[in-house]
Image (tube, rainbow, N blue to C red; front, side, top):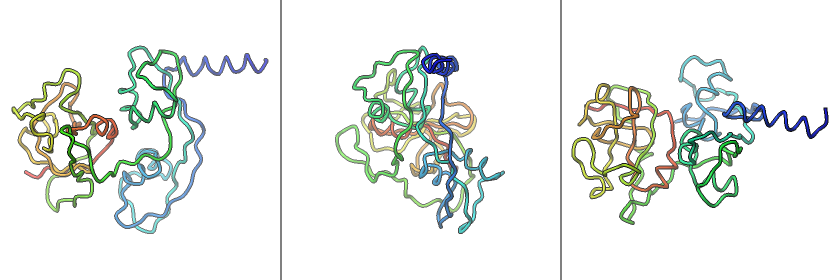
Length: 247
């Protein structure tokens, strides 16, 4: 088989899956430091909690300072665009931002085409920014460094982010809060069957918030955190976080 035909077969195999193709991973090691969590380590090395646990045969999230664990070091990841995909949804699915996807793929618009392959990974992402621009042009302190409350029922949930100006959004929450008029409020959307509206909740990487909203896609152990600035909502992406129900 010629090199040209071989390349065509390989590309066809990638496109046929319509999913993620990742180059072979290499394993590095990391010594656990005080205050480390598997989630924090996964973000530092741009991997996932599940991958770290699988690589180290861990059956819980408990880790110990001084232990050495293996970290999967991944090269560039490529995703094949499917019909109906948008850069926004691809960014959410791969823990990235639209701006990052555009930078990694040298594109300057939101136009994408089914069948094209795009890069969905890049240099280590930074989430712990000290300030977030608000919708009114001011700044809002990001409370990712807030201390963990001593009390409260702990849960692990999947967290995405939204703004008051997303497509189809009114800016008014399920309990009547006007987020456009109050962009500095800490609000999360929840499944009221799991977390009743009005509940005070501490969210890892976000801080204390009020469960004041709902969403069609927010079912079960999922939440949506309100972030006033669209770029920073993109940057939040989709992540697994620990929350504490405070009341």
